[in-house]
Length: 380
Image 1 (cartoon, rainbow, N blue to C red):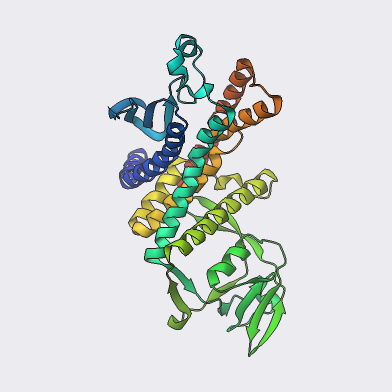
Image 2: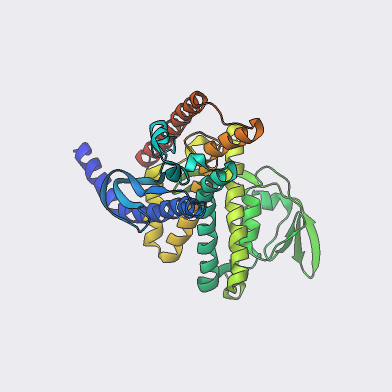
């Protein structure tokens, strides 16, 4: 009976989380591959296939330049395949290269100058970052940013804030010299400053005083699992007058979206560095199941929350693709960097070994993230 109950529970989750997850992933993958596609066209590279998903084709069509646009059965990614590619990983097709005419060679990706090949490869992750910036900019323009003034409403006993001397009614003016205008700004700085002393200037009774709290590291729950953050132990003001919404003109919103994108990249890299150093738990890395859960929960909370998650995951996918791992865009860029230094490409044997190592690393990461998903959901 327990097995049947678990299967029913899993089926319900798939039906609930599946559609939002597929929509989210399709949006992100489409723009990633569109980046590759547009720059390839700009460089006069012949594109044979633009695919959303892997495996057998569900449906598709040809555009006026002969590119096959297709949707495939396994919607967990996508690819752009060039004229002289052997597979979706853009491995050169030796047989095709040997039989191409001079006219066809003009559209061959692997015959293009190094700078053009690098631009085509880098365009995918860059498109992910641009998508996030546009989403954030639209939200900041039409929905606005919801803020609370950085006023302390309550100090938890025996917390880092209590030890530093925070009091109810304190208004935070700056942290480590950075002006603070909202409670959210303060939260962000504190969250990435676990076990690090901060110089916090607060306004109290008409004068400014400096407090030196050290946020305490704590694990908090999120849809992705446990997250290690710094906590002070204070609560924001709940007074209506301390809450406000800010909308920006579009140029300003684009700049704000760029800063938001940079913040997500900075946070992700900081986590990965701390994880590699043994200061963060690997169970925070989630796979497709947890991403699907987040997408489903975000969709249930409204279009704004769903778009916010789409932007964050677009940044994450763009960043991961820049890692110098063969099979990923960053691996190709690594090969191109070596080619630029050596003055000639790596041997095909070296590239083949690199791709095999990259495939093994990607598979191990997927298995590890999926195992984390299993542990996460069985512990709920």
